[in-house]
Length: 282
Length: 340
Image (cartoon, rainbow over all chains, first blue to last red; front, side):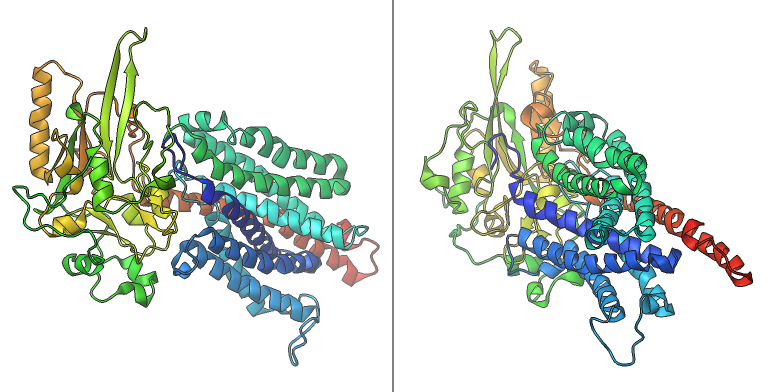
């Protein structure tokens, strides 16, 4: 209990920040995978497979963290909205993971077509991609709607977290690709990087809209720790610098750029969760 | 200081022992309306017999009960805090060793899971600090008419009672803390021991037995007045008029009208701006559901923007591949798709 009458926010901080961060990566990578399946070409198959490998494990970890965050693990967690979201996202990402495991020959199922992208590009595969993509976009926005005091009326917050989810999810795909094949010049991840650029630009615009919508509260929050991390770290280091690196160093800057985006993507929810506790009123 | 909770008062009918059974069933039998969201998501065990729930906004009934706290007559004796602790069997922290806060004579500091009443000591000085004034106010759950905590509770643990008060059913609470975030007054806290949300019950067990809430009964100056809300409002207006006639022109009522969350069943007579007392004023508290549609529309717009970005990144490539495949059919082409 804080002595100045503020609510004790400590209980919210660490698990929920990791939950939002990892959930955002899962949502972003899955959404990009779904969009690449629907809009892209066969050459995007590698990027979509990587995204499908990422999404489900992170959803599971995020879901476990969201449950750990609640002090009463014996109570009906399934009734919590956050758990409902994780269950929906988990179902679609599990389906995608199974598809990619079958396609890659890890899970041989007699009679099922194998070969990269065949299941995914089929009619049912595209239907699941469309439905799963919608769920992922919803999930990405909802992870950001943390019902913390001072953020209850921040209508832009969900949109900001959705853009952040897209950029961090894409960055995770790029990083995984570079880690698996450091020398490969894969144009599929190059296109993912382009999608990341679009998400970063969108996030910058949405952060500006969020700050403007908060009016006096923004001035109060951004002058204090940890709110000052938004203008001093998230925007310049987590968003602008990756854009500059990508366009300055091209493919060579992709890894550094992705790392910075992920770092910024972690600091964003940590800052958002920390701001209400730093404000001088209840 | 001791408080005899069983001391008969004019409107007391029957004293009750504090170790009463859970009022869950009593709430359920008396409250009429249902909470649709709870019914949709809550497990069977939580529905518990004839339990019923009410909506966040309940119409004022003849039974609406409330507190009118006249801060001008509060002397900071903390009898209300003691009575609340005693009646509700709220434990002391740190074995009763209280750390001094440095906040005047206020070492309770704030409402908490074990302090459902808090007497604020606000020191007010003139600019040259030659004049000093103490403002005292006994803070408590406001039992709002449009209660945000009740609205956001995902399990239906928070209900409105037949007295128009807001009550947390402990067995149903899952400790999600949504209500803590939703409350604009910082009233609700999670118990460190029970791990569930805790706040003033408006002495529901006492009301059920026709007793005055413990804090109001213990108040020696009638700063905390209890009764039907309409009656209290009228009484409060007369008190404000009286103070105005005496020259205290700054006196006003906070939460007596419907501007703040449809009205507060625990409202205050203040003589300084609400911020002085730690109450929200400039940003009028609103129920969280008001943000659902604007927030959803903005998220949908952002989703479309992300999809557009993906189209620019991936769709452009597909068109280029399609164009590159045309000459490949007609004859050998040295232009690989990736270069297009």
